Length: 135
Image (cartoon, helix red, strand yellow):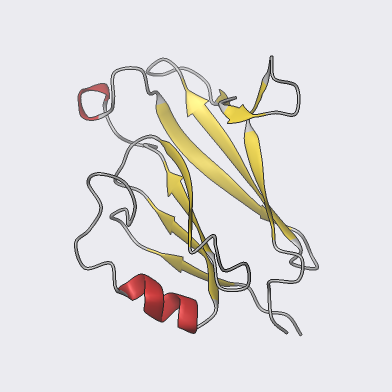
């Protein structure tokens, strides 16, 4: 039976402010982890580690800033969170991004991800896991 290994932690492992001891990523890759979730950046983020090695790459999803006050977020970034939707057969993952544009406002889709139509954006992105998740 296929298994999708997911790791979760606080600090990011990509970008300018990444944690210094990121050797954990190689250990996670060897242990067949495919998705890592983090927060701390307070903005939407999607990265791939080891993209040059299709069977061993790890997708990184930044969780945004669900409960962070405006003073601790980038000026143009609202409160954010992700909903992770994994297909039953583990062949794909859809990461839905939601936002609250105003304090005490309502949660709504945060359409910042590229779409096939170059004039629009989507409120989610897809991770293709077909042939990557081991059984």
